[in-house]
Image (cartoon, rainbow, N blue to C red; front, top):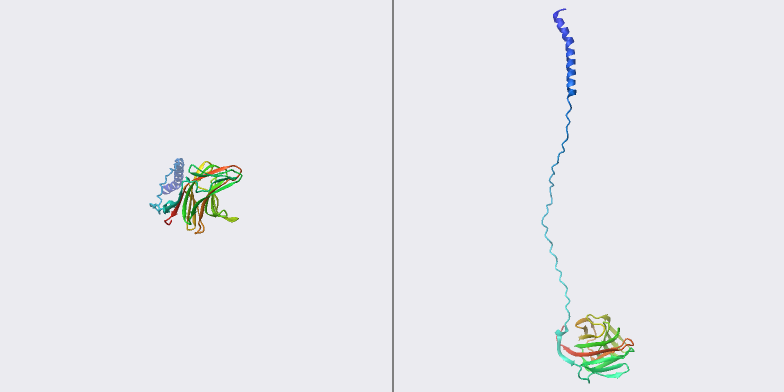
Length: 267
């Protein structure tokens, strides 16, 4: 065989063998190299700044509406008084009616006019010579020395007769009432109500005030106005006092320091 052909034949046989061996080595190297392991490192996310589309602004405090505090102005009759029409310290025992009856005694003593009711649901009345005009302010002190629940005492004003008079009644348990006595009936102008500042029981002292002006009556006890009501504007009549026992037990009340004023100024 010619040398050229021999070399070609050897090259044709040896080249595939060489390529096979080289490929096997490369695969062995590739398989022996370990695959690197990657540990994931957690990433801390940076907070994304939040856009405040409506930034806070200083909110002005709304002004509070000022509500006026209602004030109750007490009516003071002393501001409207004129001259004294009548004044009585009860030292003259000839002015008021006195006497002894089955119901009890009406007597003077120590600058007072005392009505001592014997009980048995009895009553006593004493009238004065004073005539009350249509407009006046009266003050009188009632001193209760003996009384029980429901016993009554008070003032008769614009008195024309026992069946025609106004009657202001107070009770020993602290109530008062105003009525017009007319014939066998009459009218309750102010029904029983508990009086402010009135001292219940006995002994006790009550300063009674009575205002009459152009048909308006105001009643006061110990300086506190109790109620106001309307009546006829032209009434006149005498002044008296009374006491009445509610049960069988005796009661005693006395009256002192009477003053009746003319009203000059308009309230």
